[in-house]
Image (cartoon, rainbow, N blue to C red):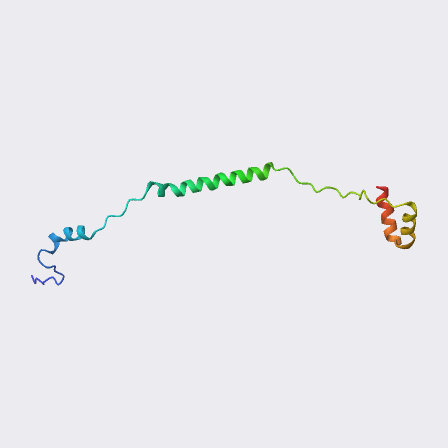
Length: 104
């Protein structure tokens, strides 16, 4: 049988000392603080609670109905002013709309 030399050899004493060298160079990872581990779940619960409160306020808020337009209480034209308005400024379309609206 033809034996060939292994070209991938290691120097003598390399493998027994490998573990010791790795242990010297290895740096222990810092342990995470408990507060940092709890930060994301607490923030998630806070956001969920805020969303629930906002939706509840939106659902239970009273509906805002705009007030109906009302006549100006300070405007009280006299009979002569009404006749003058109707004879000079009002056209037939405006006059008929005013009559229809007054009848409702």
